[in-house]
Image 1 (cartoon, helix red, strand yellow):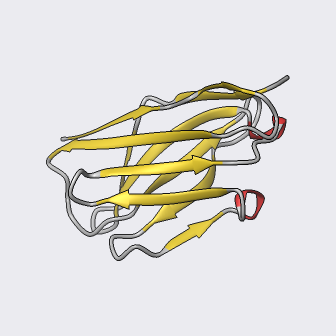
Image 2: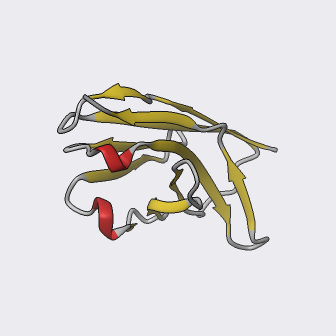
Amino acid sequence: QVQLVESGGGLVQPGGSLRLSCAASGSIPSGNPMGWYRQAPGKQRELVARIFSGGSTNYADFVKGRFTLSRDNAKNTVYLQMNSLKPEDTAVYYCNLRVIFSATDYWGQGTQVTVSS
């Protein structure tokens, strides 16, 4: 089994920054992408950013230039640095590990990010 534990959410003013962390534990299959999704009230869950085992990343257009995703393979941890936050970034952020071979998604419990003055 794989467990994903998130931390780092909270309340921040517009223009501020937060850093989310996601630590994976358990029987972690190597070589699979990890990333973050988010879900705002009344909306579908959407991809924010994803990082592959080789370090390449892809970002949703709405976060390009503001968010940076990094990965520490030794710690099985990914970090999402979020800068220049906007009220529309308010959502529950979920960590994701996708096992490509079995088409299996693992999810964290979610962490609330609220951007408000």
